Image (cartoon, rainbow, N blue to C red; front, side):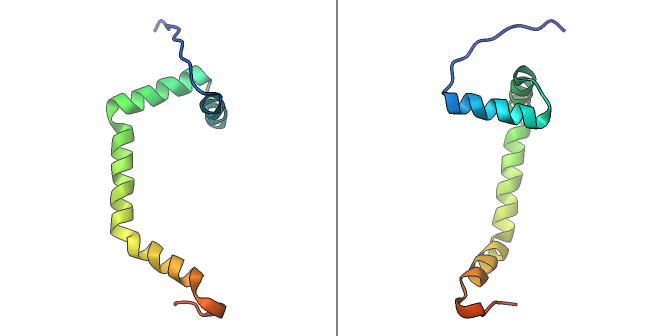
Length: 79
């Protein structure tokens, strides 16, 4: 498949995040950006965010209990 060069201006912190994330994934910046666009266009990213929101909504009490146990004074911890 032929490749087309695109140009975009972003803040330096965004550019650095893109560089680091691409490196973490073993991708070039171009391949990383292409993956992001494909995931976004396919709806994958939206489905993942929705799934995470549902998970948190269903299990919020577990997180709340863990936070409450960390705040318990003097070693008193919930079981």
